[in-house]
Image (cartoon, rainbow over all chains, first blue to last red; front, top):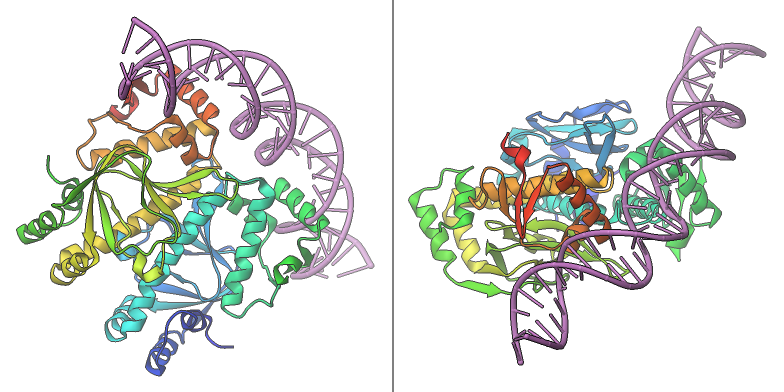
Length: 220
Length: 220
DNA sequence: GCATAGGATTAACACAGGTTGCTCTGAACC
DNA sequence: GGTTCAGAGCAACCTGTGTTAATCCTATGC
C-alpha cells in the first residue's frame, strides 16, 4: 500500500521523485500503537512529528467535569504538530481511537526536509491551514445544527477524507470508532448518538455492517 | 495611541527598532469601515492582508438556513488571512461588528516584510497558530457547555485579548457588539443570551453600563 | 419635539436532547 | 462451553433552550 501521506500531498502538490524519496526515507520507522493510548499529552513540548499511517486518532481535551471533547480526527495520511514549537506547548492531547500505525519523525529530519525540499515546506505549511478550515467547519456544525445533521456531517467528512487517501470506496469505508467516540465528537450523549444512527439507518441514509459504513446517497 | 498590532507582538517577540519601523511604515493607510460591512467575502482570493486597528470584526459563515455563525472575533491588533494564498480561497467571510479602523497591507509589502525581517516572519506564522488554538477552545466551549458558561467564557476571553493590546482595564472593557452578535457566536438564540446575561448580572458576575462591561471577579 | 429603528427585555409554550438505568449482543478469553 | 466485558440498543422522565411575538428603551435624524 502506498504511503497515504504522500498520496494526500500528491492530490495537491507536484512532488518530484526526490521529494517522494525523502518522505519515504523519513517514514520508515513505523510504530504500532494500541487503541486508547496518548501519542502526545497536553502540555508536552514534542520533539518530533507524528504521521498516522493506519487507524484513527484524535485531538482532544478533557473538560473540568472530566468529559472528553474531541476536536479533530486524524486519519491515515494526517500529520500532527509540525509547528507547535512556535506556540510553545500543546494546548490539547492526541490519542488513538483504534489501533494505529504511527511514524515519528524527529524535529531535525523535519527541519532538513523543509530546508532542502521547497515543495515539502509548502506542503507542511498547508496542512495546518486545512486543519484550521476544518475546525471552523466543525464549530459551525457542532452545537448549532440538529443532532442528525451533525452526525451525518461527521460521517460524510470521514468518507471524503478517507477517499483522499484511497481508504474508501465511492460510498463506503471502515469506521473503527465507537458510538461513544462519536458522541464525544459531536458533543451529544452516547444515547442520543445511538438514536440518531438508528434514525439515519431507518431513512436508508446509512447502512452499517459491523464496522463498515456505507452512505448510499453519496454515490448518487 | 500605539499601534495595537505592534503592542501585541511585543508581548511575545523581541522586535528590533527596524522591525517596528517597518510595521509602522506598512500600516499608515488607515481606512474607516462602518459596522456590518464585509471586509472579505467567502470565495474571495484576497490580495492584501487586513489589520484591525480599532473596533470589532469577526469571521463568519452563513448557514444554508440563512443564519449566521460567528467562528472568531477580530479585535484591535488582529490580522487576517496572511496565508490564505496557500489554501486558495476564503472558506468564510470577514465582516465588521462595530465601526472599525482597518489597515490593508498589499501582498507585496507582506512578502517584503517576511523576507527581510525574520522576526516578523516568525510572528506572522505564529498568529494563525494562535487562531487555531482559539478555535479549538471555542469548539470545546460552544455546544457542550451550558449557556451561562459559554457566554461567560466569551466575555472573559475578550477581556484577556483586549488587555493584551491595552484596551481593557484590570477587569473591564468596552464591548461594541450586540446581543444578537453574541448569540450568533455562542450558537444560542438571542432571547436566551438575554436571559443568561441577566442571570450573570444577577449573580454579580458581570456589571454592564451601556456598552461597558465589568467582570468584578476577574480582578480578584 | 417627534418619528423611527435597532436593540433589549419579557412571557408562554413546545420540543430536542440529557440522564438514568436497564437489557441485549457478540467477541475475546479461560 | 461458559464467563466476562465493552459496545449497542431501549424506555421513561425531565430540563435547557428555541420559538414566537409583543413591549419597552434609547439613540439618531428630521
